[in-house]
Length: 150
Figure 1 (spheres, rainbow, N blue to C red):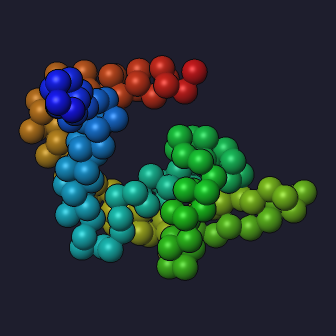
Figure 2: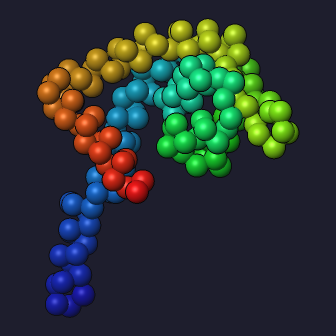
């Protein structure tokens, strides 16, 4: 990189790469929510899986993965600790190839305990950003997901 062009490209990558900036923001935001969930031992990455299983279950794993914008392999990895803890159940569907996910009574109790902690963390995010900027962020994130899924 004697001509300096590589240095400029590296700096551009670090400062303006969409993926890098989203991952950086995600790490910090995840830490914020993880601290809130600590008292009940639930990870923030597990909460939406549990919530979706409770709201939609029993739901085919493929539909759950689509709802959460997650590939099936990642969903399976996220379901395993929830299943071991007895918070969700994964059972065969009618055609035996389909796997159905549902929240267990213990999972519903965990979700009930998690929601006030999540609300507190969520309020902290909205307060830190301000309601208007938070709303703009939510809209831009939805647009980003939609644009990159096409």
